[in-house]
Image: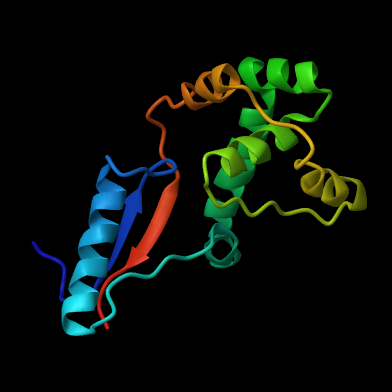
Length: 145
């Protein structure tokens, strides 16, 4: 069975780089767009998806809690005198990845902004990046018109 033309494709992947399927698909869609002007690539913020899918929202929140409990992240946070969430946000920034933290707690909002006055070492970046266990978080790319 095949999907109809213009169907939404959901790619599941961790943060992507030039070497994985998600980035290859993204680049292919963008090349086709430049060639014929038909939009094929759309990216959706996880919070927008979560607003329509409570199960996905729950999954993301559980993943955020799990990462905060990760010993490597906790160790790096202790070394820098930061929260695990600040370390994960800083890790995203240093890798050039987009991160959209969500909180209504004024203390956490301030903490989310307080990630610019320290840097992670290359060893810390590598240790956190090595946590990838092949578990996937959804990256949504809509194809079609």
